[in-house]
Image 1: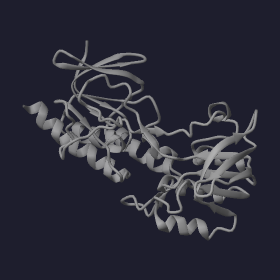
Image 2 (image 1 turned 120 degrees about the vertical axis):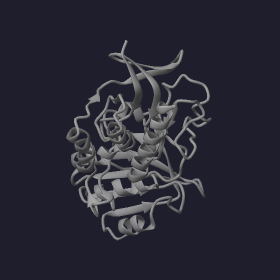
Image 3 (image 1 turned 60 degrees about the vertical axis):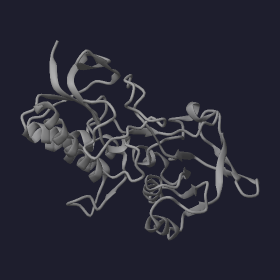
Length: 303
């Protein structure tokens, strides 16, 4: 049984930031992730004002983050962690392929897309319905599509799509957007974009592929049907924390509260990045979280 000083679960900006600092300190750690290094940075159509870049495509930035690990010889263990438990004085992370033990843990596991909860949603995923405009937007060149959502992520993906598709509908449940006013104004200036508020989706049309969407006005109850070739629900995130089997780590929403040193409610467990209960989620914040957590972890191990 191999025991690490620290297990870093997640190789997004937070996990990478922590790994670099722990490596500098000579800590024996494993960074474990079952997806693409860089996390959800990979599906960002564009990243604005990241330090050193006025504007950069998400996948390019994700690779640059990964390069930082490669440049100092840090490797990522590819595995999906299925459960995290406490076993004696150690933390036990059970993956699909192996089991890992650590004296402490950094949870940098991020979030996943929230679904609409409509009947046809799962059936039509991959058949005109996608949760990533950057990944799949090119399939809809010259077609009519809709984005559902009002946060910065939804607005940025909508801007990306507007440069590809024939017609873009942006549907939001409120008249005011949660995202940046600059992004909203950028969309309003585009000739092929129609912003529809305050509407909610009630039915996705199509048997084998998306053919349309029925939406409902939240103020007067009226319905409207849009003929579509594609649909992108971008309505928020859910924390990737269902594998955590240790009491006292999660709050009622499944996110992980921490103190200013990134310590959770359980001694030896740290967290950072999008999995924290915060309103603002930024790449540089996640990186900062990782470095703060690493400093705390070093102090913890020295004790």
